[in-house]
Amino acid sequence: MPFRPSLVHAALLSPIALGLIGCTTWWRQEAPDYPVFFVPGSAALNETAKAVVQVAADYAKQHTRLNVVVNGYADQTGNTGANNALSNERAKAVTDQLVTDGVARERIHYNANGPTGSLLSGQADRRVDIVIGG
Image 1 (spheres, rainbow, N blue to C red):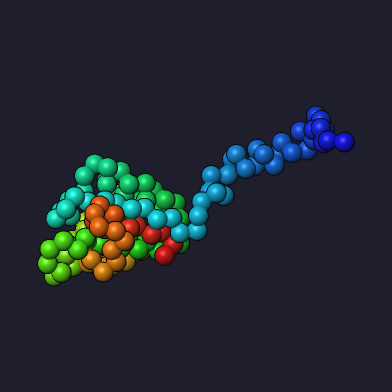
Image 2: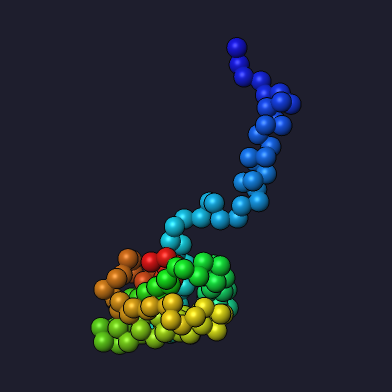
């Protein structure tokens, strides 16, 4: 015989359902990752990048016990030394924006990975990853 929920079942389960609806962080992953993308040869944050940093900053401000790690990357186009410097500038730009958005600088650690951390050729390599809880 198939299970048919009744009003009694609904009455018993509704407090559980309401508890889950009221909980905003139960579904979040342990260490959220926020990628910020850049145009070639630039460390300037556009409006989309600033919006991503703001979302990460809001999460970091809600979870003050978690560290914030900023990893800068560059693609493999051009000089390795210039790419290393560019990945550092990108990581620093994101770090500065996180501080502007209210995250304490002491909580933020940033790394310049240059082209060595490249995933693909193209925009995926021209990024900064913000990892909260890392």
